[in-house]
Length: 497
Image (tube, rainbow, N blue to C red; front, side, top):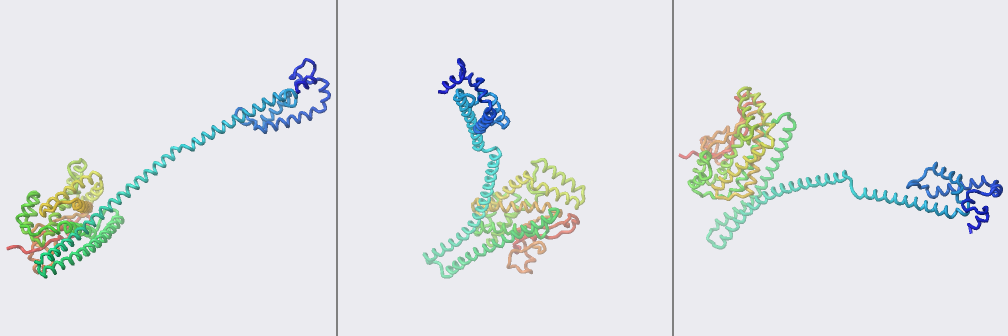
């Protein structure tokens, strides 16, 4: 119908496109008055169409200038305008609709691609977030390691406490077993039964007393730690007062004494002295046997615990009598150089200057890893030697718990010996030999049955802890002055005729 209308309105022999592009003169004259109005209408329609489709060209929207230019172009070219000719309207509409669909499809594909990229970026974490998670896992790992170490230390302390309780309970069980035997056989007198009951009560009292002693020792240790912390934090140098050092030595003495009581109080005391000396000679070297043999040759069952502690203290004395720092050997070059420098400077410098150099130098090297490793190995050797000698004398098998607890005491002795060595003052350690004359100025008697008059003629049967003497003043000078810091702990007795 549109083609028939175009043919009827155009000149003969002309096509629909010609009639759309070139109008007849008569038609132009008739429509001359409405040209301006028609042009305005075309501009409005074309602008609305371009605005409605968002003017996408090559996948992107047109600017306002491009939109107006396209509108004016459509107005100048009536052939492309949908109102110029009824015959060209269907084809132009089809092309314009196809262009709209293509532009919208391109816009949708671009949006889809951008969404995929965004989702891909969101799906995979960045390297920074991954490193943060790795750092968090590492912190959690080390936190777990620290927690497990704390639990291990707590379990070790709890195990030692339970072992002490088991030892006390074993004594109670032994007393109960004797009571049962007495009831079954009926061969023991009423006096023996009363003695067993007294022993049972004494065992319970001993457990209570031991608990109180442990609590007191724990509090004393805390006080000593606080004093040491205050002393070290308020001084420019590593200077510790004599009273603090004496308190540390007393704590070491109590810990060693408790270790002896807990592990060897059940040792048999009715062994002949000749047998004890024979056992000692089988495990001890000649030098050690020469010091310890007089005690076992005059072995007194009532003093067995003091003799056992003297044996352990004798081997621990190697820690305090070591030149410079315990653990320094000739295996490493820097340790050899320190020893040679100390030997040379002691002959060149004055006492006060040399002691200052010695204190500063040893304080700087005592925490090195190499020295700590050598000191730990040497301390383990002392632990094994003490356990071997006491096990041979008492015929008690060495247990891991006994070895671990003694190792802690030896490590504390090493730390305490290093503390003495980094002081500017000089300290001497001496363990009285068995049979030495008793000296009240330098010895404390552990026995309670001796009076002051008889003690003057007594001898030291054994020394459970050494004498500590300070030589000179706190600055390392005036070496003629000697002060007793800790008296030796001895068990007095009378000399045999």
